Length: 305
Image (cartoon, rainbow, N blue to C red; front, side, top):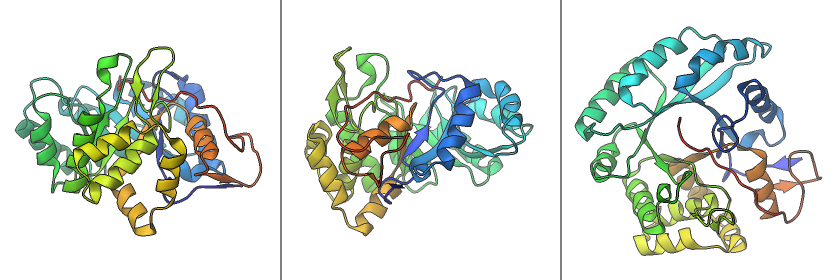
């Protein structure tokens, strides 16, 4: 039996279709349903699906014995591409749209973005809208504009080149901005491991998803950017796990109300790491994850498209 605590519920969005996993759709969808039926199901978030591939979805969903696929739809082309994607989705049976993750194309102003989001929200009632906040001069205005709205932020935390990885100070400032403003956020790409590490193949400095979780808690209780950056740089997995495990129920609720999830092309890899760090308990070894300390393995949602 696997015990998933409230700290981890819904933490791992299933981005099996994205790099470096690049799972075939015919495998990724049934595998996702398998995770939803497993004893670690509580760890699993939404199935992340790219809008440019919607045409492939009807055939594979029709083969799933009536099971309903809840998705978060990524639309890297931006708000202008969302209406057509929504229209296409309405023709697909067996799919429930829960969230849309929207890119901000070069040249779109913050004012134009929010006007378009309001139009989308009016036609996509009950669907969570995420804005992938760009790493350019528009970021402060967009982050400020998200405060007080129903919209959430999405931060890219890595990619296939070194420049795709924000350093500790940049990510700390972003986390502090959303945590203090009450803006919910998720992360994508670059969170290859639970704990901060240096990739042995590329030499890239990679953020850990446990570091991001603890940093979010610290930001919400008043830590400054320097303190948050230090937490993001921490490579002591045991200490990070102990600090998170020691949070009160109220602090856990507040943390997860801020940091909603991150995309991973493998559900079993973060599960294995969490077992190794003692944050997920298993009564016996099972096929999804071994007991005891384990070597860390790579996970990454990769680019949106």
